[in-house]
Amino acid sequence: MSWCEELFGTNKPIIGMVHLKALPGTANFDGDMEKVYSSAIKDAKALEEGGVNGIMVENDGDMPFTHLLTTEQTAALAALTAVIKEHANVPIGVDAAFSDYKSALACAKGARADFIRLPVFVDTVVSFNGIMEACSGEALKYRKAINATEIRILADVQVKYTHMLNPNISLEESAVWAGACGADGVIVTGSHTGGETPLDAVKRVKSKVKIPVFIGSGVTTDNADEQLDIADGAIVGSSLKTDGVIDSGKVRELMEKIEY
Image 1 (cartoon, rainbow, N blue to C red):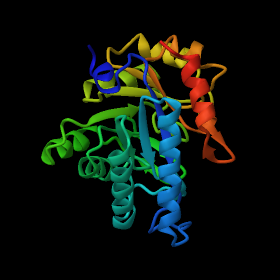
Image 2: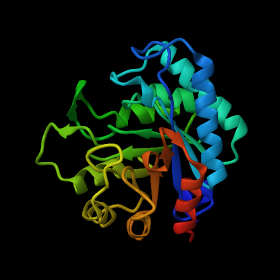
Image 3: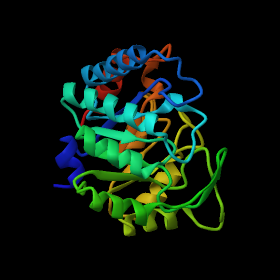
Image 4: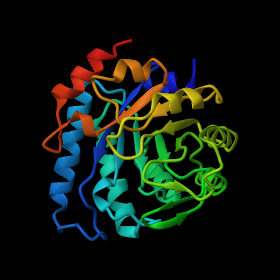
């Protein structure tokens, strides 16, 4: 049994996203932490009621993202993740956007979460917030230093919203590097949140790595069968919402569609 199946209880896990409202220390935080908590808990409950196999908590409302989270952001992200972990019966992950490995791992360890997402792991990319460098070596050393080797790392390759600093590096090469550098799974995305991930890209990565390959954007009820016929799992958020809130009916519809 693979680590993925052991953790999520299925060979094709669906990880639902809890997109947090703006956290303290960011431009859009309005001072109301009760609203942040209630929204996060409501979305997490709807995801679990709908049948997802895991939940990932992300500071999505903190746009525009910076390279590193502030102390205030990290504290809030850890606290919110801990509350969701306490009430959930599925594995919980952390995404400290935009790829702050220390915050992600520290939050996950403190909240007793099970995995993290690192969007920039082996690539050097350019995005709206400048040049971001690979963090794989430092992330693995830090995970070891805080005795968090039980926390799995899902690493994006050539992640959405970025451009490779060296465009001559292929997607397949990035994926192979991610596996070699200690990622437990890789994530392939489309160009933006909600944008469908090209099947050809998933096939190309699958042909080169032995670790699980997740689709990181654009999975819907309409394309789920086709996407998951190739991928080993998916991370889903935007398509499960109605008016910006997770809709347990949409979650249930997706999970019934892909029942394995």
